[in-house]
Length: 88
Image (tube, rainbow, N blue to C red; front, side, top):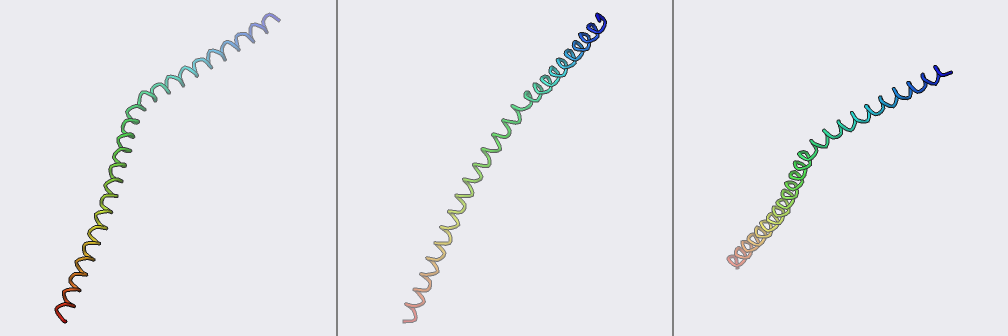
């Protein structure tokens, strides 16, 4: 009976040590991943800022296109007015 108890305790110790080692390895791996994440996070933040800048530029470009279209319509209307005045 003492031999069975010794075998059970030895098995539990082996499983416990193996589990502890596995947890340490996972934590070590995750720690290395965390070490890499700040660089990735900074790059992601820079890309997000760049996207915001591009969206602002797109909005500005859209506004400028609308202004050009309006100016073209006004100038085209003035051209029609001059033609009508000249034919009168």
